[in-house]
Length: 495
Ligand SMILES: Cc1ncc(COP(=O)(O)O)c(C=O)c1O
Figure 1: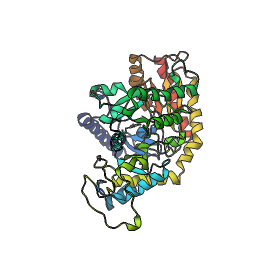
Figure 2: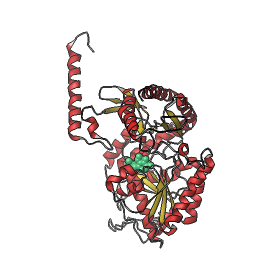
Figure 3: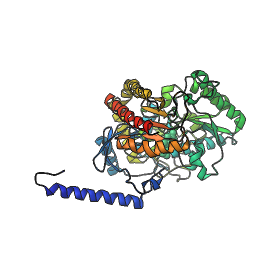
Figure 4: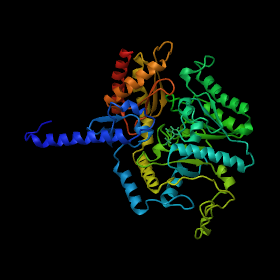
């Protein structure tokens, strides 16, 4: 763009161009992106996102994108919130770091109390981590050690659903139900057992068309798995409220009550993996609250800080803590702390230690940010925003049903998957080669070029996933629908 004075701006533009080229060259030389076929960038620029504001992010050229995925199911309150950044900065000046090994710090205490007040039932105890994988890993380790402590040492197996993603560390990977991302790391940690998920669109013929019967069957498959494996060997069932991977499978009515019943009957722990589904994604602080079930453990991460600093954790019931000693104290009689060293910890009022921890878990800056994040939830009634707009979000996405490539639109709250099919009438899906060409070759770059961040995923059947910031309203739903309509129409014409 030229200016009346000519050279000033063009010199600026040249400098900017050079800086962008340098950034790309450096990224190509030194950066390794996660779950990314790096060779696909051999001849192409990597997308570089440099800033965010509200529901939008901007690349290094200043182009704007609607963040239809909240980064990676993370940015609940949206981007560019000064109050969250300032909360982190204040905490870093006061106490940047101290571990939760033997010590506590005020922000972790305050956040634990606040989360306990928001969580369902007796989930009063928070064990912080830095990520979702660590939260899942921690929940499995706790389940194993818990059963050893109560005299049932044979319980170590975990049941989870096909295609479900629960993280990438070796324990979490063993719980994950995606064979493709496990194969390079075999042999797996022993104990992972798979059951069917709640993909009603692909329900087996004997329950197709009857959602409740399908839900009962899918839940009963958990009981059959427990029986098959031997109930005395099963520690926990890990389920997301809405399964993400595969493209948003909500639970059929009656599914979770039945699962709860089964877990109770066999003495198996029910872990609700809410790394995505907590903190407003489904219009509630926790996804289990939306569907009315009581987990023994909730794992969380992502939205707890809206991504302004990393944090994860698990919330556990008082009953689960009991074999480790409650840690509760009569406040009035509490004097100076006793230091017993890291291995045992000063507060080990009971007789055992949960032998697990990570250096940055419950980082003071992240806890301060999480508290500020929850303040925004309250001040702006974000749960209310999701609940009052979710029907409009669904209705806007459902307009896409007239496209021949759109097979199914499913989800709840601000969390949707759109399954793409080759033949709508028969629900025939794409071959691996078509899916590769369609998703990687066309849809992902085309949606990005059209200004929408979302996810074209073929870990199950091909789907497009949407999970926008909780502040979105009709104008954003319309923008998503319009971009998807135009790109999906083009995709169909290329098939
Ligand atoms: C349900 C679920 N569990 C666990 C994880 C792993 O979380 P992280 O990537 O923070 O390790 C994810 C990540 O997307 C997830 O969706």
